[in-house]
Length: 66
Image 1 (cartoon, rainbow, N blue to C red):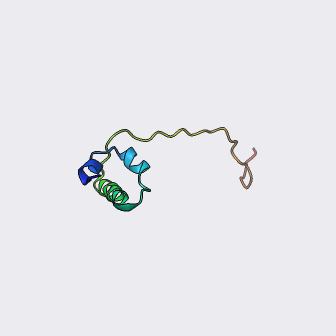
Image 2 (cartoon, one colour):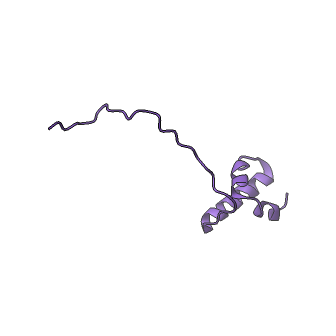
Image 3 (cartoon, rainbow, N blue to C red):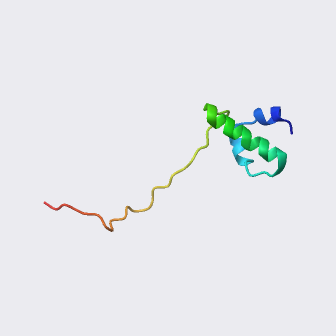
């Protein structure tokens, strides 16, 4: 894989392949650091789903009763 191929990859693809070993992995990590330094993102952003089903813990909280 050439450096130009790594530079043309989406950021999400690079992040998913960040753990690769060898010269390809080194190029991927270097490209990720370069993009982070200049504030560049290519492609879609990652989406996260937050589940808010857990009750709020009340241990250690203070309630003011009037």
